[in-house]
Image 1 (cartoon, rainbow, N blue to C red):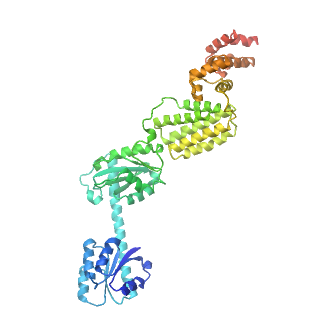
Image 2 (image 1 turned 45 degrees about the vertical axis):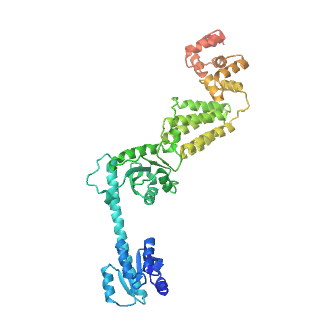
Image 3 (image 1 turned 90 degrees about the vertical axis):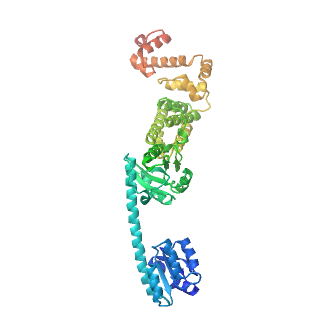
Length: 493
């Protein structure tokens, strides 16, 4: 709807014009009424109407004076004059100042409607022309920007004022391409020139800062109602020359690639906190899977959750991309579940339940949410394993050896899972079993290998099945604890 200001010193006339026709039917609404020319000028400046209808003869400022004052500010706003006299002199002077219509009182409904239709058509044409000009400028702005981002030089003939690109500083704000619609709306809200653009898989704004600039907190405030649907936004560094805008774009793109590690809906202008001062552990990621599995295998959920935190700290230090991180976390979760099922401490139906958690991992919108899902998985697995959590540490170690003697068990790894010093735990193990950890493990393996040899297994098969990949080493261990070689034992039995 186009806004209308009606000015007349007679109340009856003002209200009569206001209620003469259904304005909305013709694309207008009466926004304000004024009782004289001075009042009308103040309301014009405040309300910015699209059409002014004013009486020629009013106190303090007449209609012609009002028309002249308004024309000094806006030559384009349509203006209709009312008069109780068919005065050719008034009409001539009004036409000279660009009046759009001259109406006689008492005002006829048909005459007003006819003038409104003409004005409406003019306003619509003007609006369309303005839209076309804006579109043309936007196309030029984006073409120029994309050329600069591609490394091309800034043309010397660029008219910064015409393109709305005159500024003290320039900066790039990036989001993912799927959020461009929200970005277009944001560009209209920011009180600075903001040029939307798309490049590759990203959408962005070129923000042209005025002298006072636009701070990160101000941008966050302007974007707050839009960043709910947008996952993240990244703000590159400011540059003083448009020709250097590629520097800001590169910085913003790097930050956006790490946005998963930041809080949802935030404007990122520096490395997310979780990535700052990260120490790379330099351990294979399978190391964390082993720790989580070992902890849950003996009913210890807190060490498992700590291993999850250590795993995520490591991948953060590696600055792993979102897709790779989610894939690795899903793989870790499923592997742990499968190993717990294989060692008979977790029910088989968890083979399917595990996919519910991997779906949640894939849907995680930020790093903290992904960590929460993994920690919740540890809680649920610990609650559903058939391991008694009140068993002593040594009892848990013995159970682990008895069920997993074929794996690469190490005292240091188990101690870390149980949150004990390895020297202290080794001493306790010796006190309660009479053997050192490695000796006890060897004895269990040799005992199991004897059962396999009696069952007809070949020597190298028995060695592999009890955790000795090197057959010669198995020979030495077997002879140490039995007094004979595996081959002799096999023939004997």
